[in-house]
Amino acid sequence: MQNCKHSTVHEARVRSFREREMAKNLPVFSMKHLLVVSLALNVSLILRAMYEREKWSLYHALSLQQPRSSVINRCGSPEEAHVSTNKHLSISLPSLDMSTSIEAEDQDGGERIINLDHGDPTMYEKYWQQVGDKTTIVIPGWQSMSYFSDVNNICWFLEPELAKEVVRLHKVVGNAITENHHIVVGTGSTQLFQAALYALSTQDASEPISVVSAAPYYSSYPSITDCLKSQLYKWAGDAQRFDKDGPYIELVTSPNNPDGFVRRSVVNRSGGVLVHDLAYYWPQYTAISFPADHDLMLFTVSKSTGHAGMRIGWALVKDTEVAKKMTKFIELNTIGVSKDSQLRAAKVLKVVSDSCEPSNREIECFFEFSHQQMAMRWKQLRVAVKKSGLFSVPDFPPQFCTYLGRAFEPRPAFAWLKCEQDINDCESFLRSKKILTRSGKHFGFSPKYVRISIIDRDENFNLFTRRLSKIIS
Image (tube, rainbow, N blue to C red; front, side):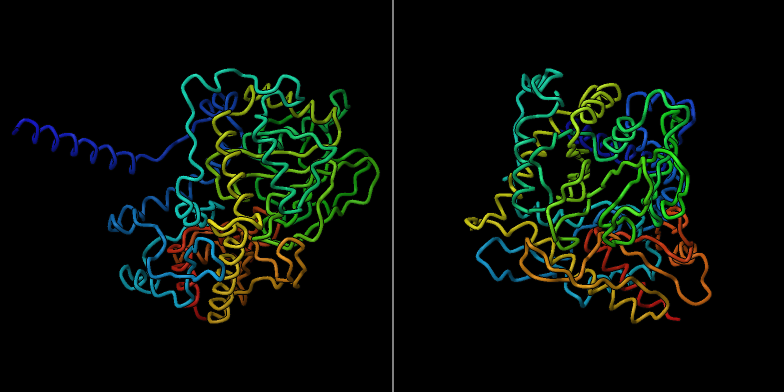
């Protein structure tokens, strides 16, 4: 018995030691390592890691000084409550009194690091915890062993079940036309973006095709486009300033990341092709005013349901040859897309669609829940901004949503926050208050602006709005 106790204590100490060592040892990437890994992994993820290294170093260094409970316990407050008006499962929503954040702020004296630089959609954890095992799948060891899913499909590694649920979800929401479109699955929409650039480029062109997007544009577009120094395409900056003759690719992100506004193409020249990034065209973020029917549209599970870790996205592509070339790129890049992730994504999308069917009486509609969640958060943010007097956020005109059947102001996944008065570097200013954000300069815009994630966990977001309201002009 003593030996057993001694062994258990020893193992616990070893695990504790390993956890501490892992917390201290931050990843360091050399160029040699990056070149090797990029052959097998999505290059954009490596670039994201390089870009974030400095911020994470600060975050970890300061976080390790905190009490262990404040680092680990990041779940929503048990005091938060929301009473559903229907008979579906009621999911709790954050209250506006921010009592939990006040208590947390008082405990650490404002020393806790609040990292809202990333668009990590952990806000949705609460919903999926309440749903329970409805999204659970079991994959036997003999299943999904082949590279191939459907050899008769252009995208031969697309799982039929995922294709079925993608079509169904778009019909339920009404945000995109799937008829006369090929579905191409990718490891997140970022890989699909790279595949689109490859497919839309001319192989024997005398010079790389220009890639543009109207500022403020998604901060990863330039680095993803130029990371491999391809002779097929190159980043050419702000679409509003583009005046070069010849072919080009314009990236239209709508609603836009980072500012949340609905976008249309701005380059009015011949020879251009459009890629529509519609990652945020879902009713929790903006009104669904019409079903999108563009030539090439990108979507992702990450922002639609919050399952960023699945790394699943899909493209709706009209042109057959473009779909074939996109599929070929993914074949060369990763020899397909994880079947396990596709099957799990299919199950999640099915539960989302089921929850929003009129006949559903078991769980609250996912989009109703997330819409209410975003409405609460934006109201909370605007109260904090007004109380401070040192910041501003955009105002959005109400729009009618065909899915929800009512008009409302857009509630983007990110806040495009501006520092007023004589603060010229908003990111550095907020960093001094231990709030990590992403500067406007990374979006081709003024450093007086920062992008702030609205979709983090309740405790983190409540703490942020409480601290922001106390920064008085």
